[in-house]
Structure formats: C-alpha cells, structure tokens
Length: 75
Image 1 (tube, rainbow, N blue to C red):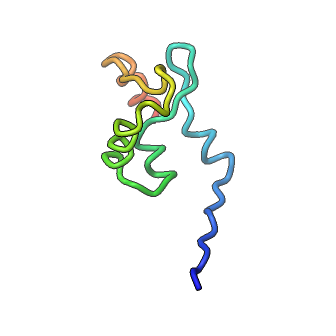
Image 2 (cartoon, rainbow, N blue to C red):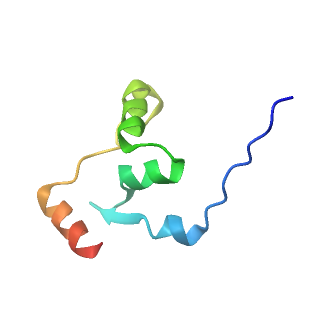
C-alpha cells in the first residue's frame, strides 16, 4: 500500500516575510519559492519554462540592478 505524504504546513509569517513590493507588484524571489517547494532554484525555473503556457504573461520578471541593490540592502 502506498504511504501518503502529508504536505508541510508553512506558517503565514514565513511566507509573508518573503514577499516584496517591486514596480507596485507583490513578488517572491525564485530562490524563496524553490525553498518553500523544497527544490533547487534551477529546477523550479526549468519547470516554469517547460510549462510557460500555464502561467500568466506577467508571472515573472527580472529585477534591474537598482532593484537588486535595494533588495540586497534589505536582506
């Protein structure tokens, strides 16, 4: 008989602390999403690219150098 795996329960505070506001949009970093899903960032991005039709056009974007600098100073 197959053993069922129960999903991990992640406290709201953990998720809320990984949400940032850029360009007037609430976003999460790919590395934070990968960590929450328990996969490597590279694998997460591969899966998104392979299934891009499942995501809205604005699903992901790259931060500018300036935005990345702001983020780095706040971590």
